[in-house]
Amino acid sequence: MVTPTDATRWCGRRFSRWRGQSNGDTPLVARVVRRASPEDVHEIEDVYLRSWRAAYGSSVGSARLEELGASRARSFDWSDGIRSPHVEVLVGVESACVVAGVAQANEILGGMRNLPEITMLYVDPSSWGTGLATELLAGCTHWIVTRGHREARLRVAVDHTRARRFYEREGWMPDGALAPIATELTTLVYYRKVLV
Image (tube, rainbow, N blue to C red):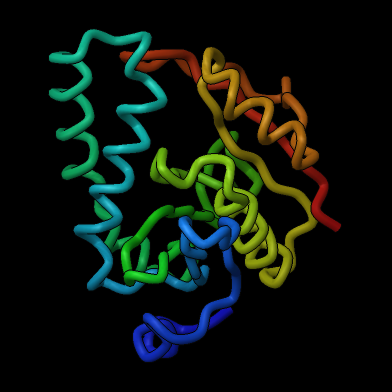
């Protein structure tokens, strides 16, 4: 994992992962997964909103989706998470220094949520299927393990089949210990994984 300073220095030069195949027509796209910095917040909000629209677009009317999505993207305080010692916010940055994905792990949530959680994982739809979500998830779970935890949870929309398949493929299983949560758009269910 590199620091934001390293990543800024590396933009356009050296990256940890390459996606795509060079066939003469399609250039390889370089990317790095790194800790987010306050300078990333606007791009994080944008990628969150694009991912959110793609995930919920078929189940919610477009006007309602725009209203809710923009409100949610701008109301969440990413800067607070970036500054917190109990939160890890990671971004996947493409070769043009564009944020293509974001993930957040929270160590302390309180109440019945007694395990660390991956509380956010959003990838720009143009980067779906490239392995970026896997890298972001691995970065967050690695951080959780380095903090001394053996298990973690996350929440996923019950009707978001693509996301549920992804988490299950990564070894996460439905966790009946916590009740599902109804939101204004969907119902969220908990998944759990033993990390070590």
